Length: 355
Ligand code: SF4
Image 1 (cartoon, helix red, strand yellow):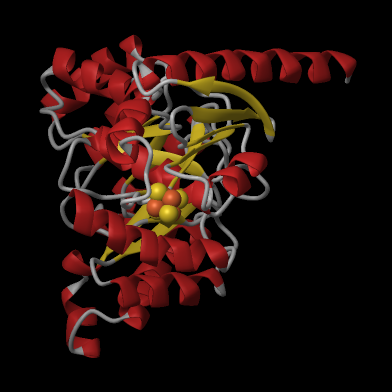
Image 2 (image 1 turned 30 degrees about the horizontal axis):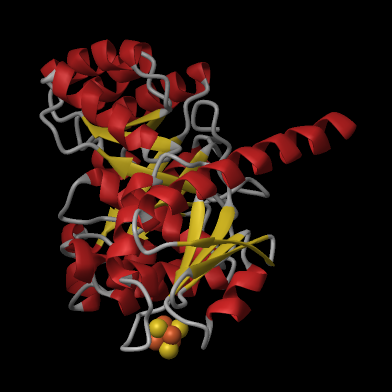
């Protein structure tokens, strides 16, 4: 458990992101955590590089309710402090803490307070002896590094941990996770580290994490983008939605448009996607420019729009429902989609009430 969020086993694959504010700027960090949570993050990580940041972490903890992971390197005192201040998971590599007494202090504190640890191995910071042994970062080197940390926790009979073996190279990361998944039972935190900017990083992460998730590997994911962390959460969710591993909000089906389109598909789609970000109930909405593919897609969706002249046709639950003029198309469509979302919430509530 990372706070109230289960990770591993049959639990849904959780979506994480990380703040990029100065942690000592409590106000800015709290505001960003709230935006990340609102976008759908199950867990948020905050880097805690100094004791000042640890104190700030305590103030942040009091102002948000999403589970928080503290990202700590080397300094065991920071780990002890954030544990007392209410952290939900420590990202710290036991092998990097130093003397045995320090490792023991952190592990005992984590055990006492029921705080899990994430071992986070990264190709960019592989131990020197492993770099020498393997010549360069390789999947085997990443896994050997991870297993060293795992062994330390095993020897202390501490099993409440998860592991990541990240690399910016998709093949290296995928190879490492596949190797590691065969060797340990603990949950795996997936990520392609330093994947890149919004577009390139999204593609790299989707390819890499997609391969692993389809193998049944991975319990929690973080998409690393050189972008607003909110985008990381959106991409993470879209990944899980595409693979039908989780559902949340609207799954849009839209044609790319061509000269047969009877309304401007691209601008309509962009406007709807932005306006309807707050809809959380899972539903399929098809936005298709003409009758070539429109009726077929609309029949499979909760709500579908097929372009036509002089009017466009709306389908609800696969049945033709009403026609919409070109004028105010986005406004009218938004209203209908919101209405459909409310109906679905009511239907779900009825089903739950019936048991
Ligand atoms: S559905 Fe119609 S408008 Fe959309 S791409 Fe296909 S032919 Fe073009």
